[in-house]
Amino acid sequence: MALSIWQSMQQKGYSRRDFLQFCAAAATVAGLGPNGLGQVASAFEKKEKPAVIWMHFQECTCCSESFLRASHPIVLDVLLDVLSLNYSETLMAASGFQAEKSLNDTIKNNKGKYIVLVEGAVPTGADGVYCMIGGKTAESILQTVAKDAAAIVAWGSCASNGCVQAAKPNPTGATPIYKLVDKPVINVPGCPPIADVMMSVVTHLLVLGQVPALDNQNRPKEFYGRRVHDTCYRRPNYDAGLFVEAFDDENARKGYCLYKMGCKGPVTYNACSVVKWNEGTSYPIQSGHGCIGCSEAGFWDNGPFYQHLPSFPGFGIESTADTVGSLVGIATVAGVAAHAVVTNVRKRKVIAEVHAEDQPEV
Amino acid sequence: MSSPEIGLGIGRGRRTPLDHQQPVEYRRVYVWELPVRIYHWINAVALVLLCATGYLIGAPTSPLYAAEAYQQYWFGWVRFLHFTAAFVYVFNFMARIYWGFVGNKYSHWTAFFPLKPAQRQEIVDVIKADVLETKLHGPISTGHNSLAGLIYFFTFLAFVFQTITGFALYSSMSSSWLPRMFVWIVPLMGGEFSVRFWHHLFLWFFVTFVVVHVYLAFYHDYIEGRGTVSSIIGGWKFEREKREK
Image 1: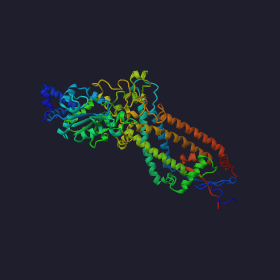
Image 2: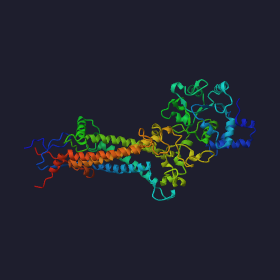
Image 3: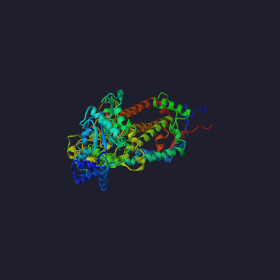
Image 4: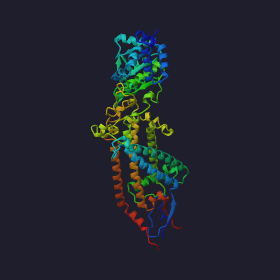
């Protein structure tokens, strides 16, 4: 019989006060509001510690790194403590056969109850040989694990939309998780996602035992419902038309809007400008760098990070739609002018005929 | 005496040499009804506004003064104008579609599709006479010629494309039902990056269209002398009257 979170905390010597603080923090992180504390405390007192499997496929582990830097240490400590993180290639002590056994046991003993957190995309090219663990392809491991999972969370852009592995030409056939499993997947995109966002999703799953409200791309609405641009503290500069023209100009020092420096805030859905990073210290735009749109699908393929418009395909790195459009516009004006000249030459007779109709009143 | 064919240089048939030595009579034809003219000018103003503000949204210029955001709101106004013009443009276009079913034959929807063989023949003739200028006399339609009609149809498709992508982009800033209808376009086109890219690219289609459209209006006015340009103000064009039988 697995222990509840409260029991587990007691064993580790936490006081009731610590427990309630943790519950309050967890309720806040999960966005439950003032009445959430009781709900959380009650759940954590009774609920068994949920088993968690953390898979790593094609990724850089930046999601794990981010997760470990969550703003609320107490939440993190306790969550990592109370979660039965039964399998995680990065964090687990076991290796080899022991690790495999742990994975298999977790699946067997917690059928339909465990939570799968997936970091990384799954390569499907060349029968999946590009990512194999213990002699099995990432895809087959994913299918085994996903089959009896209570919930699947795709951590980061790799698992949610393929990220850099899936960028053109995607040599390994990297595929996001939701395209491979026939269960709903909670997408938490970002490269990496914000630690507190990850924390919140996990807390939500543990506390309420249900998925948070999702948008049409299965991202938690709470964090991905608004554009970085709409909550950006530099937004008034945008509305006033005050833009940074170069990273070392006076406007940059004044903290104007980075729109013209290619900031992708206006097309990126994330909570960076609200939650911020590193315990609420800052986020890219606050540090003077435009958003690169890391939580948007295909952000690697959408042109240079420092241009407002993506490059026009096939015209070299600097040509945007405006370059091409201006050329087409100039060509049109030239064509029209040439046509006007040709008309006067070739249609001389027609024009003369029209003029011949102009006859004085008889 | 001239044969009955002479002086028939009107309608969709091939134009025959005219007898210019005789006084020529012209008949007034009411081609563009008032709703069509109103549509045209609202559309023209909205289109120019949309292109200008749209370009500015893509590549904003710096304001001449002001160092603090609270001192002005000019980029906000540019965007406001763009969105307002877009709504006007869309409803105006919808009114035009309605008029395509109840208006006269020149504004009827069938004028925009080469469904009849005669229309298709006219496209070939117009290309020969007016585009390549390999033929001296071409067909002179009283309304749009069939090639123009077909190109307007493609323009309407571009209208629709801009409307869809524009509202899809706008949907993230609006809770109004009209833009909300296009929310699903964004993931379909691979995120707002690419929606914005295509929306921006089509700006240049409209710039090109305006150049060619204005030129051709002048061209036909110049070559035919039948009031092509003024017809969109007053509605009247002129047809050569058939000689008395």
